[in-house]
Length: 376
Image 1 (tube, helix red, strand yellow):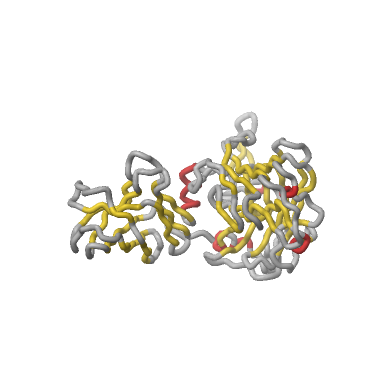
Image 2 (cartoon, rainbow, N blue to C red):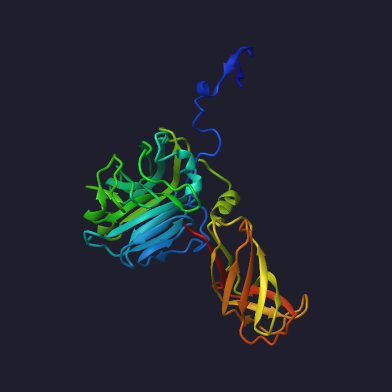
């Protein structure tokens, strides 16, 4: 329905359409990247971390891949362009002489269900635009890649950082891929990768789709990892339908956190003086008990459980005896949808009896935690 125009004299004439306002691209939810403003950092809460080898998460939904350990340090920081609170800082802790098959990169995996409307792999594939704010101590032509879930359809792209240690907004438009297989389930549908250092085997020609496998950069681009103490900051990451980069879509912290919690949830890791109570437990024997957690959002898949310093406290309602017994093992049971999880655990000798009740808690320690991981 057209919206009436009001001229300078207050007279209504004609109508305003989406075309005349040029809002066709920006109606509704635009950004396919989660946590593009680097606001959510459940795992490290602003602490720095020297990355090991392989792929490791830092700010939620973003991973750093390192061929070798102890080469890159990552941290959520307050250094950011106007309009943003945080960025992700990457620092080359130890410079690398790249081998032909080496790879160092920042990346985000996108769930297939979230990119199904792009129709990649068909004649109707949409053009998309990737934009982000970047700051680096190393100028020149940098690169990245847009990749399908199987990593056998790749579009290397380049972008220029003109001034050292200065925030710049980058925009890259990519014509949709009409070939290959693009997953539209809850598995990995797409990757966005920023090259930090890639050997010749995994570099490709910028500006064209390729059937090569596992590319992570463009031929001739800057290799940040080769420069000791080099820095790379990024924030305001947005991937959207269309050929123009629109202003970054800011979401509330609560909404962004909920989007992140579909893939990862952390409980505890707060106070060194108070326990963090998670749920009521029921004992089926002196060593076995069960508890249910109602999750704040439905998770992508049945999560993998990991924990540190969890305790089961037994006793009547409102009464907790002793200091608690550490949990030895625990397994989640699937619910559909995955927003309620039932856990069973073995606690060791607790002195409890069948039918006793109690509570499960994170111990009074800043390292105590319960993690639920359903990452892609």
